[in-house]
Amino acid sequence: MPAKANVLLIGGGSVGTMVAYNLETGGKATVTVVLRSNYDVKPTKVVNAVPRAETGVAPFDFIVVTTKNVPDIHPTLAQIISLAVTDNHTSIILVQNGLNIEKPLIAEFPNNTIISGVSLIGAQETQPGHEKSVLAARKFEELYKASNKVQCYYDQDVGFVRWRKLVYNACYNSTCAITRMNPGQMRLCQFPLDLLVRPLMQEILAIAKEAGHKLPDDCIEQLIKGGPINTMFKPSIQQDIEKGNFIEFENIVGEPLRKAERLGVAAPFLKVAYVILKVMQQKTKQDKGLLDSYLVPSFPLTPPEDTLICELGLTLQS
View 1 (cartoon, one colour):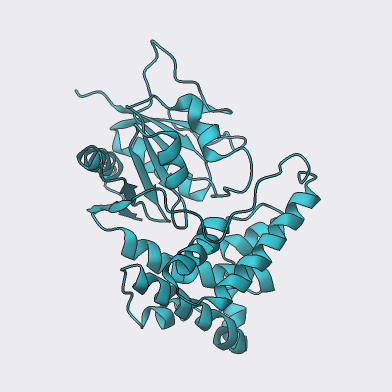
View 2 (cartoon, helix red, strand yellow):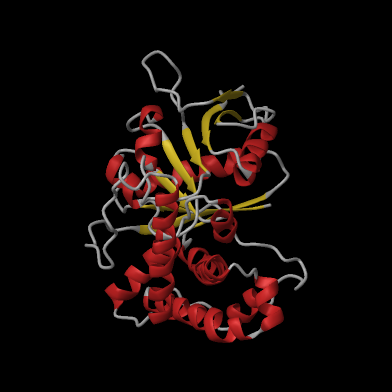
């Protein structure tokens, strides 16, 4: 019997629970989960801190990250997982939202395969090592779908999925967080959709098109009208604001905005949303007493392009 893959899971929320369940049920992986609470979850092993990769101990084949993506808050993700990464062996899978989430990890772990994702799982890797990254993505696909409880398929171009997700996340998610109105409430009022949400979505479509990903025009109405109007579901950033948590706005709103500036695409609504969310994040830092302790440099709107990314992907659906 082939040895099981050794997987470390960072984050045991709803997405993390799904990942752990499918990997364990499939029987081809042993999962160690880093949990600060909720110890009723029972994968192969539960720890309350990231374990250290040591000589003589089986290295982690995959580190799967399902936490919120907040690059403007220390410690960074690279710092959090560094102890558990074995150079030139561990593949790092980012099940997170937004654009360019893989860049800091590529810079920190240049000899490791980075597979990045939104709410589905996708993969991006630099052109060197392309074959190696495809093998890692295929291996994780095999591990994940072994449970026979989810659909799982490999996709060489995850950019379309990533940008389509941003049409919702960068627009509905940010607008709901700022206004404290959920999508159902906005649909009942109608004018927030016409004056805020649709213009934001049109900007994302324009940026995506210039970036080489032509999204269908009808995706705006599909996302706006998707689901029953009376569900009153709150998007994740709105939930985090109401709980007093840090919000993952840099990769969801900031990165599309920076992409727009590099491509010369006008995005005035997106820029206003970004600035307001940045102020809200600053307020949360003040409320938590962290402003003096964690002085993170502001993210420039036009950072240098220092990494060439080619897109490949692995998509999972529940």
